[in-house]
Length: 98
Image (cartoon, rainbow, N blue to C red):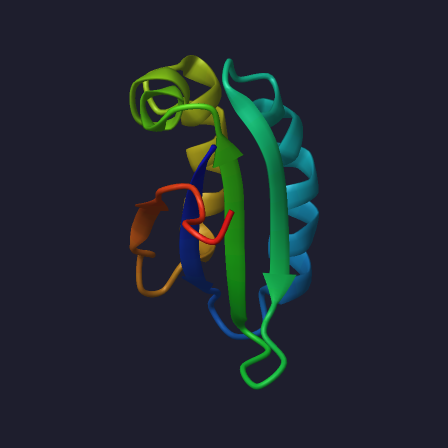
């Protein structure tokens, strides 16, 4: 599986609204082909920081599949206004530790 990771910085004071919007957005990504799981973790040291982790069968399931879908447009509408700055998204190969 490929791991998508994004460090999210949420505009101060909007954390609770972001968490509620993420709950709404979750089914949109879960309905994607190749989706393998999602976690969103809040940073302890920076309360406006979050780590988004999404597992995909293949990178294209994220880049072409989900991002090319109408569900991504809904995801973007629900979530992208919370970010400052806009997050960097990276993809990681399976663990070499086995």
